Image (tube, rainbow over all chains, first blue to last red; front, side, top):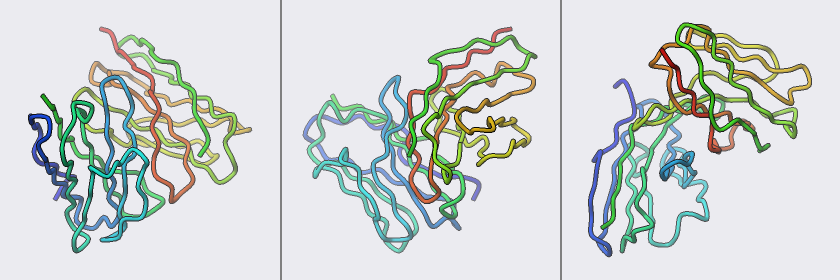
Length: 113
Length: 109
């Protein structure tokens, strides 16, 4: 396992549909993060997990968004009733401990039409 | 975490050193300086981080001023593949990374 994997790489969906993204972190990393990035902006923090516990959620994470990390391994990010404003790159990252840098995946690009 | 200020864009000639500045005048004593870069259509890549001493690794050098209010990331011999957006982040260990807009570095042949 050489990196963080995200699936799918691209997703096009119609407004109002639900979408789910998956992130597989580096296996020994116990911290997992989700970010959102729109064109021309830096990544914005959404939420993070330590093992299976979701420890922080940004106010950007509206009630249409939910993230899970069952068993402290892979994570899913679901967006319900998608809106055009949800179009963005969704990035996942993991780290082995608090003091280390993050390893990011290549992201899932969501387009809501 | 303290806020950082970076120039929006910079150019560098291929083979020359690229020096990317970052201002973090409100940094506190327990905040580290991190640098990441993001090449188009990829996720950010960790480059280097430090607290107060200068740091060097195979990718870059990080020079932090004595008062820690600013830092410079140095790519000693820039190549075309170093063209990317470079993010400077100041962070207390344990807090999540908060990215700004970064500096868009263009390495020109």
